[in-house]
Image (cartoon, rainbow, N blue to C red):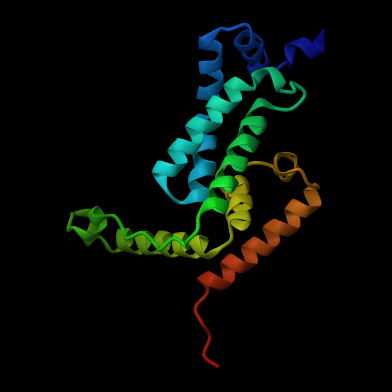
Length: 188
């Protein structure tokens, strides 16, 4: 009886959605919409593509809801679908994408742009984004899942289908690569 009180809310929505309740599936989507889009954006680096992949992930989740294994968390299942769609898209790209230009709003003068702290913060964020863009999709993925989406190594391991120790090693290597990209070159 104690187990019934601990049943995650999404399980009831999954059962209702399988019966054809559109509001239940809508509730499931609302619960994972931000992390799904965030993962797609981190992996693809393009808002339009990330939005399309997120929509496709939800469509596939809806179409395959009957195949969903309720022993796994629903959000990790949809994240795995999203990840696979992103990796497929990255494989199909034939050219290396050039870096996108900074949005024009950052170039135009504004009250905030004159503040030294704001300029420094923007520069640091831009440097971090540029360094992240040089990492492989695998490295960006593990960093985004851990730091942006606050997933545990166990959850990430389940999502990626590997051992938690592997995730810890991948995180370590990705952080080291990022640290090297972010640190100033030492004169030789």
